[in-house]
Amino acid sequence: MLNKLTIGAALLAAPLLWAAPAAAQSNSVLVIYGNDKCPTNDNGEEIVVCQRLDESERFRIPKDLRVIEVTPNRESWAVRQAANAEVGATGTNSCSAVGANGASGCFIQQARAAKAERKAEKEAEADLPLP
Image (tube, rainbow, N blue to C red; front, side):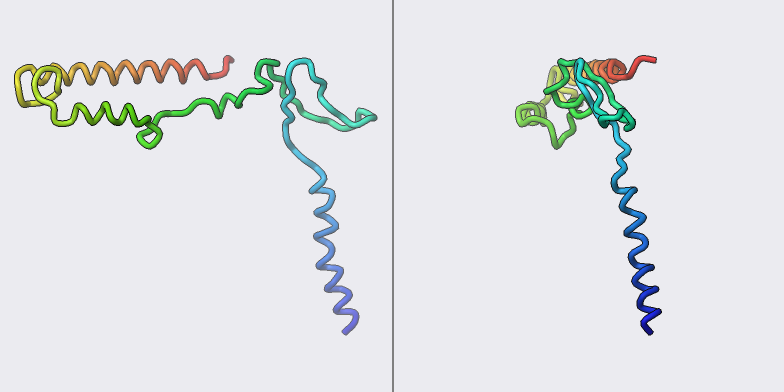
């Protein structure tokens, strides 16, 4: 009976002994700025992977977190209110089948949407890394 308990305790403790060295390892990239040195241990035996960024980026929000795409739930109150002003409009520049020149507003809306789409595409292309 005692032998079974000893073997069971050894089997339960074994994964804990193997996990300790793995927990001490870290596989990450350290971001450094300007002329800062990439840290290592005193003997220089430790390998640390560093990504160097310009000094002007030190206290800024990372680039991948800066870009915020405007979605309907992130749209400002003023923009939503302006959109509500066009609801039910008739006549010239209204994009409505009712009233004179109602279709002229449809072209204006489509042109504005196309311009905004082209602007978003150019901004997305500017964010691509260079080869």
